[in-house]
Image 1 (cartoon, rainbow, N blue to C red):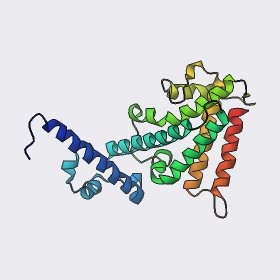
Image 2 (cartoon, rainbow, N blue to C red):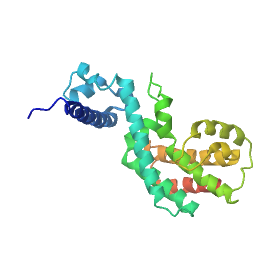
Image 3 (tube, rainbow, N blue to C red):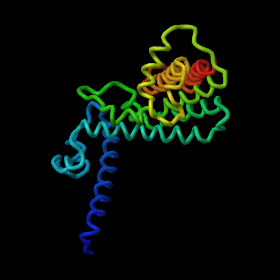
Image 4 (cartoon, rainbow, N blue to C red):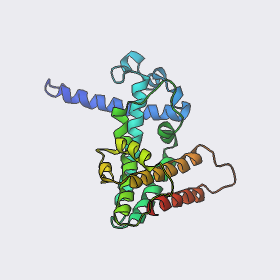
Length: 239
């Protein structure tokens, strides 16, 4: 079948999208087999049936491939957690919190190598470009801060009995400004609400990471340990 000149751009775009999707899939497999530090453009090209020079039409090199994999991982995590959170009663902050926490852990257990990519050891000689990664990376933290903001607005949360909230809130504001996943405007929140939300997020991520990276030791129940860490995070959010 002859493709008309007018249809050719559409066909090329579909072909490019298909190759880029396959590129991410092969990249994920190489992450599982070799880790982020061992990601090789030559090896990925070989598995795609291409020479490296042909692959460079789709990706400029290892760093761009890593960035795409990071963005894809954060996007997948965000989509999963946002969808789960939407199933919880909007007027029940505790239900929303527990739905978010369980969805976070479930995604991590289903995607351990992608979790390691975004929350594990930094890749040598690679620095993620914030203009591409910050937006997807802050979806879930913003959602959690949004829960904390609702709790604070309802007068149900108490401030922590220690200093440092102002500094942590200032840092969080820079990252969360303009994000709407949690229906939260960080500039309109008191420092304690932001600090508590980010601290709760840190607890959840730490609990999941310690489970996936084997830091909990033998003879334990990972779900039970995560539940305890999540209850600590809940206590920080809800006072």
